[in-house]
Image 1 (cartoon, rainbow, N blue to C red):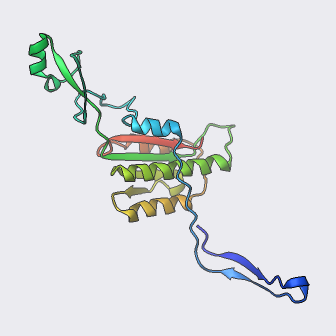
Image 2: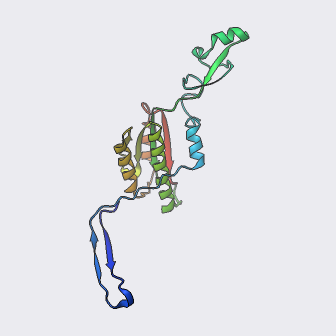
Image 3: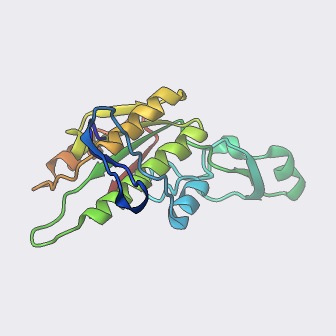
Length: 208
């Protein structure tokens, strides 16, 4: 976000017979948004059910999204996922497998903490802002409410709902972001620990 910027207007009259220049400061604010960017790995992760590798819930067990297939019962499957007509037909327990539905709420936490003796440059921070911008846009298109917090925003929470104004506010926050190196992970630890309900999924993003 640039609140003002210097300018110089100079005439280019042929052969240098006359010249004139005006120098000043433009007071019109300019906002340069990060270019949305999702790497193929991140996009694959999002499209494959948010990658709930460490989730408290397991995909296919107790999730009632779009129907995927039928399979034999395994210990741990919920009883209400059993298809009794198919079980009677095949004389063994058969369950319906469904795709895990997209979460209704996501929390995204950004941090710049790294261990002593390590260094990261400005370019990695810019790439992280592009990734965050891409995540915000993707969740907005999927109608997923996103709660965002970051160390460069002093851990204030910004919610991206289903309106364009909230998305624009979040992207403007990224445009004004400046990298700050955190000396310890206390803030990150606090935010992750507090990310319970109503957040279905927690995504931690870092440039480190």
